[in-house]
Length: 429
Image 1 (tube, one colour):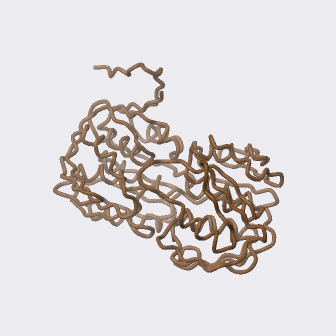
Image 2: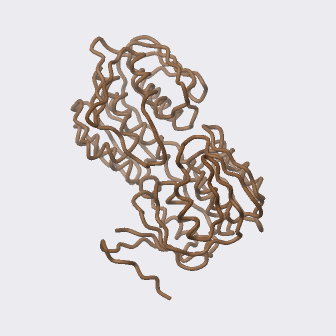
């Protein structure tokens, strides 16, 4: 069992390079199934979700070569329809992109139901609604999703009942090679939706409106290979911004798109944090005691739900009472019990957390219950004096590229250790 051990209370100082965006990378990698040629994908983060995705594609017949630390060549000309291994698709949510990609290319699809972090019910009804609007019949049975469009996919009018990033990307994949034009209304506007659309367009697709409420996809017969670089990860960047503030430090965060971070930057500035923006960098400097704020998570361009656990740590360190409302998922406050172990004063009422600032957190042994909650525990440990042990490291490794090494390089006293199952890690006095 791997654990992260942190001796906290040390300010983060220096500069850190942000990796490629996890959520964009997964969409683009599965999109290569639609391409009958070689794609070279650059700026891929070295995380377990990417490794699992590459293994799924490899098991299904894709030819994959690693060109350097962040670049892979992928050719899916020889691809076994419906051969995705269930033990791998269950490990991640984004595996449902196989359905859209296989339908778009083969007019048939078969995949195991997806897995991933558990913080609320995440149905795929909007995905199914979209596929059916393009002429597919979809069956969910026995832990698998089966889809069939024997006469081919045809452009359709799709209106999502609620904004869904996953369903929007899946429609981009399926509609790219459908006959006619597909119109998606109430589409998700997140940067990774735009990145997947840009990749498909670089391969010859005809997609317009990505990043707005309405996306139009004019289907093409074939897609060709290309070389494409994944955008920087706005969630990783936001995580380091918050870590700098939580430790009372100053970080220059490189390889970012500042516009993607506007909602986070605005809330940090409201809390009293100094932020300077440059073309592809942000400099974050902590001030004295932080101000209380009220935050509501929303779809992009609102405050991202994937930064909610991290910002909650800052609210614990702030002056006064803050209100944190979760506007996306039903059950994303399960990590609060772990912060309470560290002295946090948080009361949860449904989708609302009332956070009383306590000024300082105390070191403790805590557990990562999901990806973003896990990194919030790391931030809490960095801010607390004493030794904090974070368990459940596998969740954090799903979405953060070398986070221990990056934090160590900017002054954190942090290490990852392996403890045999059943053996307790003893904190030295």
